[in-house]
Structure formats: C-alpha cells, structure tokens
Length: 438
Image (cartoon, rainbow, N blue to C red; front, side, top):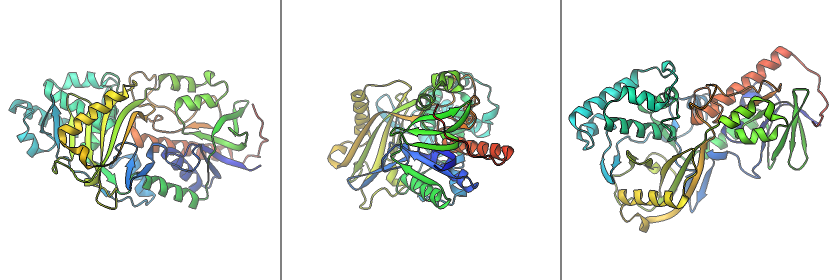
C-alpha cells in the first residue's frame, strides 16, 4: 500500500491549494473528494439552460490573498471589475447609491451634513490599519465612530456586502473593516465562465504538479495511533496511508472523523464556529426591463442585487445572469419568506422581470462560510495545527487568522502546507510506518 506524505480531505479551493503547495514542494499528495465527479465545493459553477450560475453571487476581492496566489499560479482569470454606480433601497423606495463623489452629491438619502460625514467616514476607512483596531464588535466600533444614523445604516450595508455576513453584534471590527477597505480601494472582479474556471485550473495545476486526485472518496475516519496520524479510512472501507492529513471539511465534519475529538481543540473549534448563511435567487433573463439598473444594496433590509453579466461572460447567447442575495446571519430562515422578499426586490428594480426569465434557481439557507472572526471565538486564529495529534491539520474558509471568505481558504491552505513542509524538514527522512486502525 502506497504511503503518501499527505492526504487532503475535500476538493474545494482550500483542498486544491493545499494539494498544489505540497506537490510543488516535492511531497506525494492524494486529494480525496466525496463528490463522485466534480470538484470545487461552493466554488462550483452549474450550466443551467445554457447559462452559468455560481452558487449565489461570487466576487474575487482584488489584492487579497487568493487574488495574489492565483496570479502567482498564472491562472489567467479573465473578467472585469463591475461599476460601483447603483441604487440604494430604503423604505421600499430607490435612491442613488452614494458610492462615488458624483452619486454621493446627488443622493436623496442624505442631507448635506450627512454627506459630509459620509465623506469623512470613507476617508477614515481608507486610512485606518485594520490590524490595529482593538478587539471588539463591529457595532461597538460603529457606534463609537459614526454618530449620524443614516451614515451608520449605509456603513452596515457595506459591511454586509463585503463580508456576506449579517452580524454587527458578533463580527470582529478589525477583519470586517479590512474587507470593506479592500472593497473600496481595489474593488472586486467577476469572472468569465464563473468560479468553475478557478476550480478547473487549480485541478489541472495540481495534476501537472504530480498530485493524485480521487473523486467519490468519502472519508469516514482520520486514523491516528499514539497521537500520530497514520492515514484515513473511506466509507467503503478503503484505507489510505499518509504521514499527514489536511482536513478542509467543516469544523463539525472534521470533528466527527476523529475518534476522541472531544479531547482535542477540534471540540472548541466546532462549538465556537458561527456560520454565515444566505438565501440566493439566481436569475437568467433575456433582457433587463430597466436597462440601467445593475446594482442595488438594501439599506434597511439585508438584500443585495448585482447583474454579473455586465462584467463577466456567463452565457454564449447574450442571456443576462444576475444574483439577488439576502444575508441571514447564523440562523436558519423561512425559505418561502426569503424567496418572496427577493422576488419583491427584483420587482422593485425591474418591473415585469418574470416575463424575461430564461432560467432561475433559489438556494435557501446556503452556508457561505462555516466560521468567521467573531466575538464568540476564544482565539483569533484557528488552525492549521491540531496540537494533540501530530500530522493533523485543518484548512478552509473557517480556519482564518483574520482573513475572510476565499482569502481565509487560500491563506489557511498555504499555512497547512508550510507547516507540513517545515515539520518534515525538521524531522528528516522517516521510515514508513505500518497502517494501524485505531
């Protein structure tokens, strides 16, 4: 039986990145993905009726960890930055979104005094250093720094959009402000072909680097003996020997794979994890009924609308792809109520849109991330090492050190790979050990 240097659990972005980093460092790596045919996890893109739907709205934050890594990998991702010109939704009515100087001056949402205060807030967000923000909630920071109620409402709406989270009382201020700052300074990019282009190019790069990728492999158990990893057991009983294991599964799933996990840090990570959920209405239309309405942010409701086809190619025949999002926080919501809210939002923006539908999909209570920096965490940093079990590491969007979303997935994967390479360098060459089932 082959002994791998590392087995990676999960074929999402974190799993693929960890695989590439280790393979390029000369390690023998096998990636085990539970899906029978596809990779990508929440980064997968579905071709539905001739149009490409991501799993809800996806945007790559320019200048972040993931963006820089994809440039280093030479993935050549095409697409464009969407315009920030848009509309705000307040009290059931539309107004100019104060996202740039021109729209700020013309916006009906704010009086002149409030406009001056919003300009001052934007200047502060550009200048601040997020890592120097004292530990505290987003609401604590906002209440202390933003006196004008409407300006504060707009600020919270920007935070929801930048982090995909609706949790001002729980979100840590520093990481959240960092995401808002990046959005304001660098913007985001919508990708031609959807996020599947990232997945496919990472997969190809991993294979070229010498990694083995196996789909249809549901890992049931992470095996360790006397505190040291020996490999994994799949649901069909197959054993895979490995000196190291990187789990990119959720905190709960990782916990369930490890016998005696209640005596490790995995228990705390599972209990403290706070997911971020959204409802997404994904639409493909023949045309936009209101041709100039491409972006809208809810100010008094946690909703967001974006026409992704204005900046990315997501169909071959001109069909327009858009996503409406309702941010739900960590709590399960009523799917029918959420779908109705998103349909009403669409009707406000584009009356008569129902007649133009080519395809639609509604995704209720979808997990965007399994955890994010919040006040309930006893530690700022999660992973990559599981200290009680030598050779066991975690990565994923929930294993950040202050990063969020795909940046957390990428950064945690890199950290896990670096730890394995460093540990092997210190230990030197080791003799293969027999696989022993705990």
